[in-house]
Image 1 (spheres, rainbow, N blue to C red):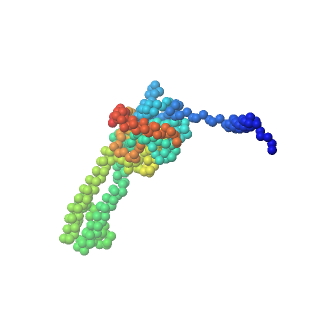
Image 2 (tube, one colour; image 1 turned 120 degrees about the horizontal axis):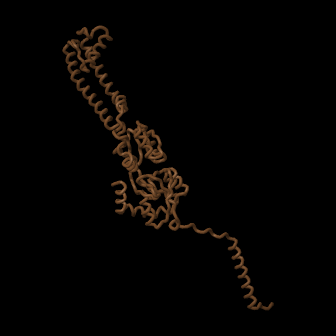
Length: 374
């Protein structure tokens, strides 16, 4: 039987095995690529904030600084979260949206409407302002012959005229049936007698004078008497209706509300959600780069109405077009503003908390009053 190995030899062999295993582990670790450094947290890096001039929500001052309702709210939220940022101006709304989708901007701050189509490509914070689309028209209602022509060629006017002609025909036929055997004025062939009777009925309706011609039988004269009285009332109602329609159109212009937009020349800012709203009601429109360009076209008579977000229209009209353009009381298609973020942005939750905190405080009421007077 072989002799047992010394204890110190066993220990040396165990140490060697441990050393080999440790060397292999170190080699495997060295073969693994070094992990990439973790990206800087949004709270620690400078954010790129895209914006666009949209008074009174985003306005660029002469010194290059920015102010406005949305800008002030962003500053309030950024201060609350301790964020560092810099503004980058974008000339168009579409460019602002495209930059947000591409991640060029960490957040877009202007007067951006939250829509289902945009929500599919980017994220929005909690909405901070609710409004609607406003309609601007030329001051004075744009008094032209267009409303008069439209009223005279309308289906309602046609119905009224046909109703009066129909009544004259019915009474004329009735008078002819009663008088054709007793009155030479309505006797003779059917064509001669009936035409004479209808002509007399028409003349009697217009009160142009009927001379000695007319019904001679008692039933005929009773019908004639009822017709004369009834035709006076019918003509009075018809005249009052037409006069009222023409007066209202002349005083208020061809655009009085949303339903009129489908019948006139309409303008809108290109690339905005206003175009979608106008397309939904099947209104044809012309696109303009800015609201100011559209209002200039309205003042010059190239369009009949200009549609845009109501507070933006009110601001521009009050500052540049007060005496030449007016804003109708009508408002449609509710709009909600929010900050836009790239999909998956970690800023959404903290910004929502800061926005809600700001908009539910007296500071927000003071901000709205300062810019909008409300």
